[in-house]
Amino acid sequence: MKSIYLDYNATTPIDPAVGDAMLPFIHKHFGNPSSGHEYGLATKKAIDQARQQVADMAGCLPEEIIFTSGGSEANNFAIKGTAHVLHHKGNHIITSAVEHPAVTEVCRYLENHGFEITYLTVDEFGLVDVRQVEEAITPQTILITIMHANNEVGTIEPIVEISELARRNNIQMHSDCAQSVGKIPVTVDKLGVDMLSIAGHKLYAPKGIGALYVRTGIELEKQMHGADHEMNRRAGTENVLEIVGLGKACEMVKQNLASYHDYMQKTRDRLEFALKEKLPSIKINGHPVMRLPNTASISFPGLEANKILAELSEVAASAGAACHSDQINVSSVLEAMLVPLDYAMGTVRFSTGRHTTIEEIDRAVQAILRVVEKM
Image 1 (cartoon, rainbow, N blue to C red):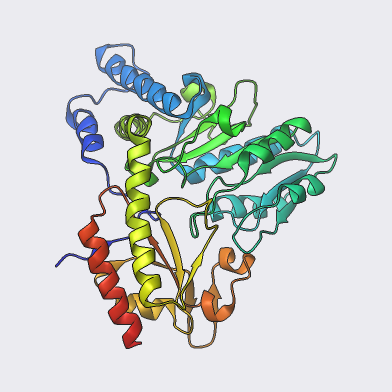
Image 2 (cartoon, helix red, strand yellow; image 1 turned 90 degrees about the vertical axis):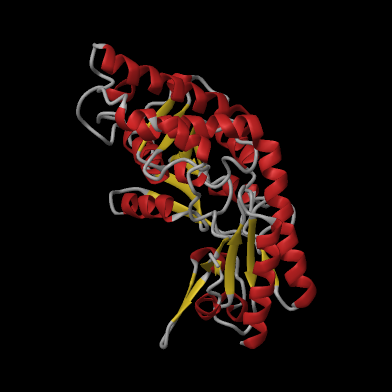
């Protein structure tokens, strides 16, 4: 029997409707969008439509959407692009200790190139304190970059309040929304951000495509140099096939977000309640209320996550710690949340999706219980 996929925060399958939208651009519509003939015009029209679909979902203008190779490039573009354009104003950037490596590694790079980075601590739920953000601001602060929702524990950060703080202090605000898009409402005016990153493969579009929202008037230094593609902000012939897929995926989110949210929460809650009932000693990480509807980070005290997953062949999930003979590598998120080592080393992230069935959840619960009780 095929294993049960509960790792939707790692990646999602391409939705059948997204795949159908992409099919004509594999064989029939192959023209270069920069070409003036009918072959190019067909693909340029498709890109324009996809840009509008992404913009409609995000609640912005289509010209504020820049297509990228994924969430990592979008984060790099936002952070490096801001840093280099505003270096004359200051060299200080504020971020958090629970960001994805696509943000933290960019910040580490900038630290080696004359910038100062403040990594804010979080509370036991993985939540950033807005007051700490305010206290971290200096006259040199040019950018605040805080994720909307955490990929490991699902905690949703107070982006609206942080954005208001940034605006009052004339500081640019960026949020990595790779995990939140398609699960909870993500619109630029509601969040108040200047820049917002999207990753296609987290919302049932292909891998290798993403987008960066850049509010009108925000200047970024180009990271990809060449011709004047993407409104002269990112060089390179457009990835038409996957741009079409991302557009369709965003259209589906705009049309169906409420039902996606409710169904994922139903399956996630069923998993958590069933496990908690049989294993009362487990710990569920993340904020009890402000959490993504599909994410269950569960700590099994006294056990090792990699050993649980090795035995749990029926279920695909992710470990929060890697235990080796001489050391235990706990994720930076669990470390920042000060999860006790006995719990952190046994943390497994289960994440449900649109295609997860109730029957799969019930099978997964039985498999997990069997493995944990055996161990």
